Structures are given as C-alpha cells and as structure tokens.
Amino acid sequence: MYSEHGCYKRSYILISLTVAPFLTNFVVTALNIALPSMALDLYIDAVPLGWIPTSYLIALTIFLIPSGKLGDIYGRKRLFNLGLILFTIGSVITVFSWNYPCIILARIFQGAGSAMIFSNLYAMIASIYIHQDRIRALSIIFGSIFLGSFLGPIIGGLLSSFYNWRVIFVFCSLIGMVGILLLSRLDVEWFGLRGEKLDFCGSLIFGISTLMIIQGLSKINQELNCIFLVFGFLGLIIFIIYENRVENPLFNLELLHNREFILNNAGTLIQYAPIAPMVFILSIYLQNIRGFSPISVGLILVLQPLAMLIVSIFSEKLNKMIEAPTMVTIAMMISLISVLIFLSLKLSTSILVIILGLTLSGIGASLFSPPNSHLVMNSVKKKYYGVASASITTMRGFGGSLGMSIVLVVLTLVPGNIEISHLQSESFIFSLNLIFKILCIVYMTGIVFMVLNWRHFKNKNRI
Image 1 (tube, one colour):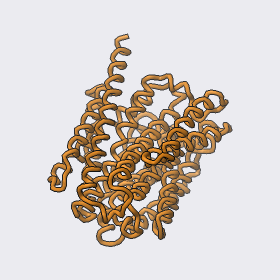
Image 2 (cartoon, one colour; image 1 turned 30 degrees about the vertical axis):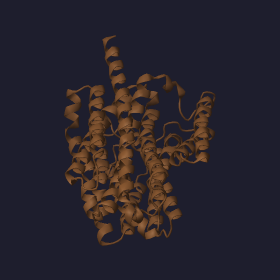
Image 3 (cartoon, rainbow, N blue to C red; image 1 turned 30 degrees about the horizontal axis):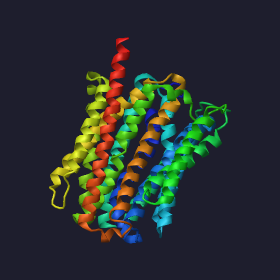
Image 4 (cartoon, one colour; image 1 turned 135 degrees about the vertical axis):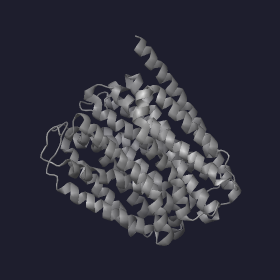
C-alpha cells in the first residue's frame, strides 16, 4: 500500500495532508468576497486593496523553489508543517488586524506558508504511495483543493454578510490548528538531498528580482518604478549567470534548453495569469458597482470552482481520448472565450452573462491543469522531477502575480488611488473592459505557445 511506511493508516495520512491545501484555497477564494468589507472597515483605497491578494502571490512565488529545496535537505514533512504553522499565524494576525500594514504582513506569512506546503506536498505523496494508491491519493488531494475553492466564496459570503469578515479567519485559524495537530502525530520524515546546502545567494537574487519586477509592474506609470522593472530583469539575468557557476544551484539551467519544458511552463503562467484578477475585479464590480450583497456575490463567483470540480470528475476519461497537447490547446481556447464574454460587461449586463463567463473559465482551467502538469513532468528526466514540480506551482503563482499587476496598473492609470466606496461607475467599467482586453491578448499569446508545442509533439512522434 505504501512505498516505505505501511504501518500508517491511509485515511489518517490523507486527512493530515489534505487539510493544508484545502485551507489555502479556501482562504484565497473567501478573501475575494471579504475584500470590499475589509476596505470599508479599514479605510483601504482601491489600489492598495489590490496589494492584499498580490502580496500573497508574490510571497508564494518568491519562496516556492527555495522551500522545495529546503524540504529535500531538512525534511519535507518538517517544511510542510512549518508552512501550515505560518499560514495559520497569518490567519490569526488577520483576525486582530487594525490597519492595512497588518493585513499585508499576514498575507506575506500566508504566501510563504503556502509555498512551503505546495513545494513539498506532491513529493510527500510520491514518497508514501506507489502505483494506483498514489494516483488515488493525488485525486483526493486535488479534490480537497477544488473543495476549498468551492466552499470559500459560499462560506466567505455568509460570514461577511451575517457576521464580520474577521470571522472567516477565525474559522481558518481553527482549521489550521487541527491540521497542525494531525501532522504532529506523524513521526516519519522524508528527504531528497540530505546534507546538501541551500543556494541562499541564488534564492536571494531570485526573490529580490521577482519583487522588483512586480513592484515595477504595479505602478508602471511612475518613472521610479520603471527603474524597478529594469533592475528586476537585470537581476534575473544575474541569477541565470550565477546559477550556471554555483556547485549546488537552486534551479538547474539545463532545463532552459528543454523546449517542451519551457513551452509548457509558459502555458501554465499564461493560463493562471487571468484567474486571480478576474475574480478580484468581478467581486468589486458586483458589490460596489452593481450593489449585490457579499453572499450573493459568493454564490455567483463559486460557479468557477464548481465547474472545475465537476469537470475534474470526467477529465480522466477525456484525457484518455484526447492527446495532452491537443487538450491544453482546447482548454486555453475555452478560457479565451470566457474572457471575451466579460468584454461585454456594462452597468446593466445580465447576470447570466457573468455566470456563463465564470463557468467557461472554470471548465478551461480544469481541462488544462492535469494534461499540462503531465507534459511538464514528462518533459524532464526523473532526477529533475522535484524541480519540475516546483516550477509548475511557481509559474501558477507568478502568473497570478502578473495578472494582479495588470489590474493594479489599470486601476492606477484610470480611476486612480481613491476610496473603493467612491469609485465612479463609468470609470470603473472602462477599467474593467481594458483589463479584459489585455487578458484576451495574454490568452491569445498562450494559444500560440500551445500550438507550437502541439506541432513539436507531432514532429517528435513522427521521428
């Protein structure tokens, strides 16, 4: 039943490992519903409000690859448990936050915690389970992720409407504590590179470069932040040069010569770039422009993860019928159609249009993820599985950061830094349409990459 530790019950191990991914996705989706209430309670303006989800995504992106390497060196369960502890501390801080900086600090804690969780989760499953048991365990893990995304808007909307947005994080703190207690009873550990040293300098260069790029994108209309962009990209060049010379690199540059690895990771980044800004901007549109209650908005936005959950049930059969490169191309085309639908949003747009757009977005994301992850992992040798696994989540996080940066740029350039309650309908609708036009271009670029990858796959099979 297990590769090494048959004495542990399957149900107990799975329960221990599913709490964290459920909690992280629950918080992400519930927070989108709570943002307008948080803004009014703490007097947060529209542009700073965007940094609440963005700060989480930045921390996730910065810490993901180093956390995977640390897990291989010092123990995957140890890093996984530390990540859940950090995430829970972030929830507790949010409950007692009295100002904007406290919220940002809490989100950084949660982003770093999520990085430790997801960079070690799949490696732990692979270390415990073999063959069909592993496939079933991963299915349960993904089910917990989709369930968190599904319940987040519903419970978040209910708690925001009838109680207070802080109650959401009381709920999350309690779940996190339960997960920590469950993990504390696992007296087993897994290592991959025990005794090897962490490339701390490379991690620092990568982290600072990423932070500077996101900062530059968020306020690109300001001259100083253009400098941040330039130095951020220069930092990435320095990172590549440094990694090519260090003995134990954070990221093996041999993978940069792998065309399949690059194209499929680029596809991951592009697919996930519009998802976070889509939910964020629609939450503000529905609550502050259209006047819907938080619970109503929660019930509407939940349709996206609900579509993911339903489609995932049938995706295995579809993936057997359709080749992976073809499936990811079709999935991204469906995602493009969803964004094109949102281009029609106006002050009086039927709610059915929004429902259709969210449903197609969920279908596209659910059809894309399994075959894309398979293509990334299949493009590398076994010794690079850890790096490939971390790269998938890194691209998802960086895609979300890029997408939120697009939102912040547009909100800065059009309505400006004003209180969310003072947003003008016409100005916000113009911003919304501009954001979705940019996201259309993003998906069109992704489709080009996927077609190139499909052609490369066909030519490779002919040979």
